[in-house]
Structures are given as structure tokens and as C-alpha cells.
Image (cartoon, rainbow, N blue to C red; front, side):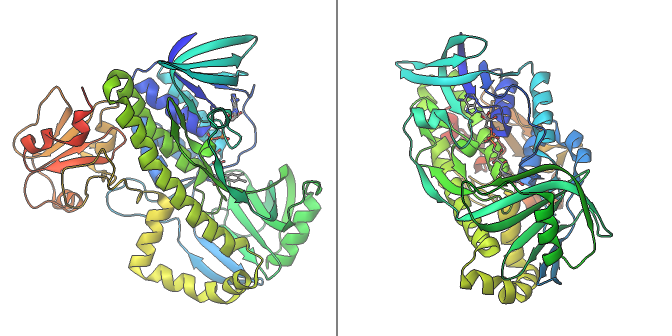
Length: 496
Ligand SMILES: Cc1cc2nc3c(=O)[nH]c(=O)nc-3n(C[C@H](O)[C@H](O)[C@H](O)COP(=O)(O)OP(=O)(O)OC[C@H]3O[C@@H](n4cnc5c(N)ncnc54)[C@H](O)[C@@H]3O)c2cc1C
């Protein structure tokens, strides 16, 4: 079989990439070794930046009613409520969503699959990548479905999770280490008088447990000493014991639909691209789930890569620069994610004296204080929602100055009743002209905003007229007062 892109893995990262390629009209073959979707859900949180991507794909509005809008977060130390914060209430200007969405990963995957089938694409389940090699003008892959077959593709993307065969095939190091702790998880029913939308964390000097709201039940995650490969699977009784020790409310735990244990790692691939192979999602980086970033970062890797692959196929002369910019832009995001999730993990679950003291004594007064200080609160918002991720200094940026500056995510607002992000072209760059003159050109999709409101002016950092060159993934590539200056933008040199 011949195709343009072979996508290995149909989890959230692979499905997002497939949707991005399908809407750009790129041929691909997507495989996953699973024969059916798991009824269990790993990720539970869809962050605001992912909701924005789902808005561009047209699936956000359908997904939101299927989940829980996150309520307050409550922190208990030694059975006493110490902090209650609206940490998921992250409204700010320039984003049409204001709350993270608590929803099972399976529902998110299902929405992406439906979106993909709307574009005429699908995943081939029960198909596995066995091996591949790079050829002069593509890759040649050995796959196994009902029987073994070959795929000749121009590019291969490993969205194949932590044990990525694509990463191994390219001999790319996965640098990092495993955490020492053993974690246990239960999805079950809790009968009590507490609000079902709250996220709660409970701790004492010995351990910690968190409760995450789900649509129909709750998830409990607890730390259980050091990890041993042969430790027993958790039981409902284990959770009842930990619950009674840490939680000050009476509750009945029942009907566990999933009881499991897991071992966490923090690792990042040394390169996200090697020749004609790219890595996205857990194949490229894994870390602790504190902060609910893993799936979301994979979705954004795929969104960054999709339009670049589409361009690379249309303008092969620019392929090297475009695909290298994927590593250049997303690898630092992965590195920074590992740093922040590692710090958060050690704070939440660390067993050393410093971590225990920080949890017991420092957190109860420092967290509310930090949340009340706008610079700290805004920084935390930008990190957790992933709206603050930027690609300043990327080789695809410039010219232009201001706020937003090239490399920033473009703020979203409505133009004639439609979201700017949803109006962007899926392959071509878009020029938003805040000007009396329209910016028609075959080189881009033109959108005119002749009379911006005061709020739009503030969001765009405008005194006068300006033209904004926006990438298909809703990042600003360049801004200039004249179209002639914009026509020299670095990005446009790659768009033949
Ligand atoms: C307990 C827990 C809680 C979490 N909570 C959150 C959260 O709240 N928010 C969040 O953002 N993230 C969370 N995560 C992380 C999140 O689940 C992952 O980051 C996410 O699933 C990664 O998606 P992916 O598509 O990159 O990889 P995966 O979902 O792992 O998908 C990879 C796919 O590749 C397939 N595959 C592998 N090898 C091959 C092969 N050779 N051939 C064909 N197919 C192959 C696999 O079958 C699999 O379906 C959590 C993780 C855990 C463990």
C-alpha cells in the first residue's frame, strides 16, 4: 500500500493528527494494534487550549455537555480543609472557554473518531507496526493486520505511546527516570453529601489521595509506598482504608469499575524528529499526571505537526525547514512540561522531609496567598490551561513586534458571529487585516476586520491598522503595518 503519511497509534495524539491531515486533504494510513477501545479512561481533563483545537475541528460544542465543568479544588491536610480555590475557573480575555472540562479520555477519543469519519478517514484497529526503514524518498514499513503487508509512505509519525516502536526504530534515546512511588487507582461510586464537581486532595505525613469528578462516578488516586513489580493489585478495601484515614467526611464507596496500579516515569525523547520520522504525544514525552497535561500536550504536538506535514507534502523544497521546526518548537514545550510536572509531583507525592513539610505547613498559607496575587495567578493559569505556550524565536516567526508577538497563540474573538480560530484555513496561512483595505492574495486566506471594537484592539495590541499572518494552528507568525512588509514574512517563503 502507498500513502503520504503512516500514523502509528490511534490514541488522542494519532486521532488529532489524522483529523488535521484529513481536513487538509492529505492521504494517510492510521493503524493501532488494539482491536477495540478500552472501556477505561486514563486522562480526565481537557484543558482550554485543547478545547480551542476542538473548536477548530468543530467538535468542542458537542463534547462539553458530555463532561463536567470543573468546580473548585479543595486541599485537606490531616483531615482539615485548608484551601479552597477556583483553580479550574480560568476565564480570561481572548479565549472563548473559561473552564477546564472533566471528561473521560474515551469520550474525547470518540469525538475525534467521529470528526475523522466526517472527513472520510478512519483508524485501522488490529493493525500493528512491526518495523520500518527509511528509504531515499520515504519510509517502508512492515505491518501486521489480518496478514502481514508493506506500507510505502513519505513520512511516518509515531503516536504509539510510551513504548513507541517508531522511537525505537530510529534509536532515539528516551531520557529520564521512573518515580519511586506505587500508585493505585479506582473508578467507583461515592455516596456522600459533597459536591460531585469538586477536585479534592487529602494528605497527611504518610500519604496522599486525590478525588477527581467524573460524569457518572469518581476517580480516586492514592500513593502506596514504594513501587515493587510484584506488589498486589489494589482492592476496594485498600481504598476504604485510605479514605477513612484521610477524609473527614462519611462516605460509602462501592461499585468499582476499574481498580489498577501504575508506575510513573518522567522521560523525553532526545529528538522529536529524525529524518522522515516524527514522534508525538506519549511517544515523545511521559510525565506524572499531576496537572492533567499529558494527553493535552500530545493533542497540541499533533496540531503543531499536522499543517506542517500538509505543507511539506505540497512544497517538498520547504519540508526540511518545516519539519525541523516541529522539533524546534515542541521539544522545549516537552522539556518545560517535565520540569513543572516533576516539581508538582514532588510537592504532591514526595516522601522526603522537605516535601512533607511543604505540604503540611507551607501549602495551606502559600497557595491562597499565591492565588490572590494576579501575577502568580496569571502565570499558573497560562501554564495549566496551556494557552501560554509560545514559540518565540522559532525559525518560522517574524517580522513583527507587539502583543501578541510572533510566536504567541493568537487570541480568539468573534468576527461576524464566528470564532476567528474557526475561520482560519486548515492548510493555507490566513491574513487578518485590521484595515480599510482588504488583503486579497492567492498566497493566503484573507479576513478583514475593518472596525475593531475596543476589546479587539486591546487583544490585538493595536493603535492603528495592522495585518496579522496566522498559521493554521492559530499561532501568530508575523505582524506588520503594511502588506508589503508582511509579504516578506519568513513563513510565506515556505508556502510555494
Ligand atoms: C492514571 C493516569 C491519568 C492521566 N490523567 C491525565 C489527565 O487528566 N490529563 C491528561 O492530559 N493526561 C493524562 N494522562 C496521560 C494520558 O492518558 C496520555 O498522555 C495520553 O493517553 C497519550 O496519548 P497518545 O495518543 O500520545 O498515546 P496513547 O494513548 O498511549 O496511544 C498510543 C496508541 O498506540 C498504539 N500502539 C502502540 N504500539 C503500536 C504499534 N507497534 N502498532 C500499532 N499501534 C501501536 C497503542 O495501542 C495505543 O492505542 C493520564 C495518564 C495516566 C496513566
